[in-house]
Length: 465
View 1: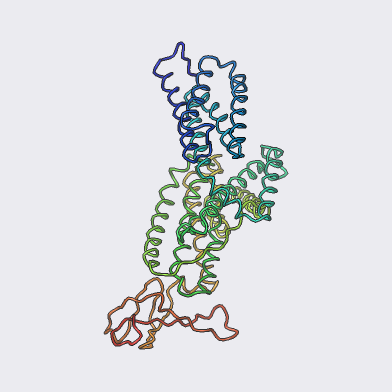
View 2: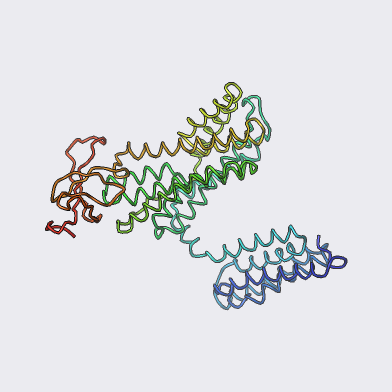
């Protein structure tokens, strides 16, 4: 608690300046956006924050009355602004009232000052992204809005009603913890979903992979795989998106571990970090190869705030948590590793949170939890590679191509060079626009690799670039 009468003068001045600075930050944003008009700007907002700080410093008992007293003149001034300018909106008025509270929080204590800084920064960002927020709201379909509203309503009703203890009828599972993790994982995906919708359709293929990795890396893999069957020239672009989405799985797991069991983070950071670096190198190579490839229009992301997928994840998470406990009790570390592998085939988030929680409770050791999380991540990566192959996405892996001049089949795919006998063994650069996909025969199965023709750049080739 900052006491201006007995505490150090420097501390009091620092907190007063902090409150004034937060008010100036919000005021500058309002003035720059011209949303405040003649109502408030870069001078009024600092004074409002300083007002709240001084009241908190010298008259803390009357702070609610002081804030209420300020509501009347602010409201009158804002009504006058609306009357003369015709600009109807309450954002600046509400921001001014919140600024009073921020000034008081900054003066209350060191912890209050930290919270005021975080909240003030968040308010400034929120005020500055008015247009993207409105674009996002207009881009969301009515069905998605209803689904989000239902999900949030269920969360608000169900979460407080669930008992926060282990229940024998659920074999020792804690229902509130399970539902809380469902909300956390779904919320993490929703943040990425909002980012993707806000930046769409301008977002590039890199951001498509990143956002898709947070929402659903498996769905991103399937989506990119299907695109290669529609347009063979997109195989580098789609492969880059798939690798990027797979890389995001590792930082996402680190975020989940940091929330559930921060003590485990130092042990898991090295292996998951190494896997991230390796994936980033592969993504960098693919990004270089996509330099002249066509752009790919990403599919619309599905809103993670849907009840059915959330309930499905809750069931998977509860099952994985229960099986992991019994596997550790009956078979020890080997049972945990086997459970991690098979769980990772379906969902890596459930196993990551499960082992983080078991390590926090002391049921499994840190080494076992770390190894299990890595096994689950590797298994999930193998699943994505298998999906890319099964879904007729031979463009995501090296395939056979022919030079239309010499008719010699060669291996290509991640490489954009093709060997031709006319080049005497030398490898020539090719362009993605020279790729022409032949029409498959009727009834061809998805296991049939379609023949693709590629032109080499030998000088004797009349159709070279």
